[in-house]
Image 1: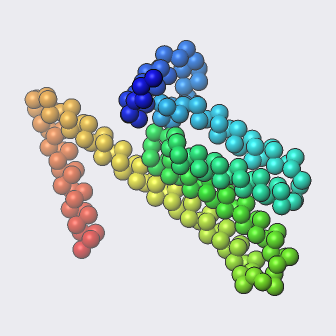
Image 2: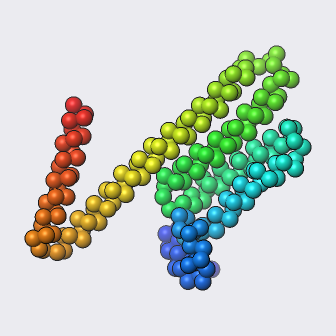
Length: 198
């Protein structure tokens, strides 16, 4: 079997995915994923089930429970980084940040459990690890806002470009007016940026 480059392989899988009979029924579950990893939604649901359900059956409140949760979160983070399952790059970054934050939460929980036994050797106290957890949550929230704003900006830019390209082939008074208004929007946004910089 010949190994195809990633783009060709993804295009081939996209074509296969379109022919699947269940697409009209379950397409809403897979439309956000790249063609090669349309199966990622059930895997992510399994991860959620394991983190919420399986952990209850591991000795409650023990270090084993924290270790299993930490391992599951780390595997999910690694899988997200390796596969980059979402079509939008911003969604991949946000998913990786959230998985890392879950891992960090389990790690800090483990450290706080052990801290009572080794507090004489530890220079950092409980307050520090609490601050780490709160800070990581705030970082994820801010990153989500920035990533969403960037994604909206990118989509607006792509929409303007596609409109401009589609209008270039048409020569009519309406299309000339639309091209001029798009140019004015571009000039106006550039002038606004220059004013805000100065």
